[in-house]
Image 1 (cartoon, one colour):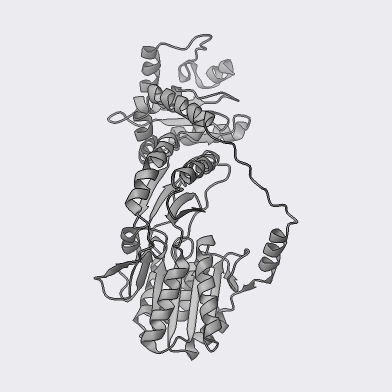
Image 2 (image 1 turned 180 degrees about the vertical axis):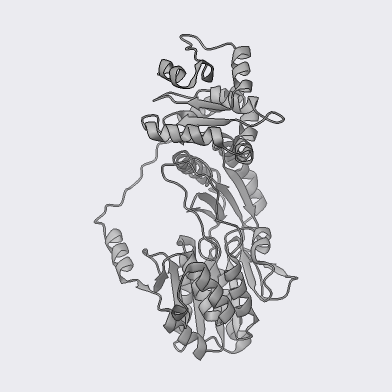
Length: 466
């Protein structure tokens, strides 16, 4: 192959030397790293090789960034989030990856280096050794836990399938009709995955982007929300598991919109730009919980590149959304086991959602804030005759349950529980995805300009919204 390359492209296009036996001395390795733009690491199977980490460190600022191409069978592919991941048996994929690395823009190179340089710089081999020894010591003192696997033909599985089959697609015209017939309306919308499109973590391939596809809702969704909030007949809240600060940045500029952050632990009633936040007390000493939990979470953060800690008013979250998917899931399961033992004295529970593990008060869920919203609105307006609640994951099921209970006590009220995606749920209807949620908001707003903007953006016909 070497002879063919030199014959076709010239003798100076490639320098080749095969190193057999012991590794190169550090000075020779550094000379290669600093003069190379791409490192291709293609083992079929091996343990942790530190050469790619050395390459990333050697190319730190002010040096120009390099690119690592790592075999998906190597341990380092689970550690370096900025590396291009490739199957060494796939020749075409390998060629394409090399071409991508050589032609990659400087901005993308720099962004890939930024994903890994902090982790590589703060994890020397001595720290790795101490962490491994500590983990081995911890493992010898842990009792093995047995997990019961529910079979595919269990009553729980059968019931879940029946619920999914009975779920109806939301009839937008029926929703609009009920909306126009009523004057005391409540609309409650989840944020991530409902109002904002959330990208799923890759199951087999390393993620190239993080979290949501743009932290703020689309311009069309924001405009539709703004129109709906101006209607004095509407009470509208966005309920999120995110922090108060992040939620305000995302949708805080929409006047008249109520906000509930940290799964309802804190909330701000609809008002102007200046919001007054209120906080619910669930009887948990949260500072003591953090004191017990943070040393354990910090240990897992150090060993999982791409993970980070998310602190809100009444929750501690460990996000592995941007880690290697398999490695992140494995670490999350071990984290829950350690935290369960350390936090036994506290009245807390664990929530696992879409690449994040959260510790929250046992009594905290989105159903509490939805019940409070409905009760307060009913008392203020002398009744509620229309409720629309939309959510996409298991944390939103408590919202649906609160709305169902409220509608049972108020038989004359229209109640629409809408899940994003067809799946087993307590909702009565579903829409396909978060873009369909935008369609619903646009249709209810009745604003023709927004409707046509959305039609152009999605390619839908105006008849759909008539």
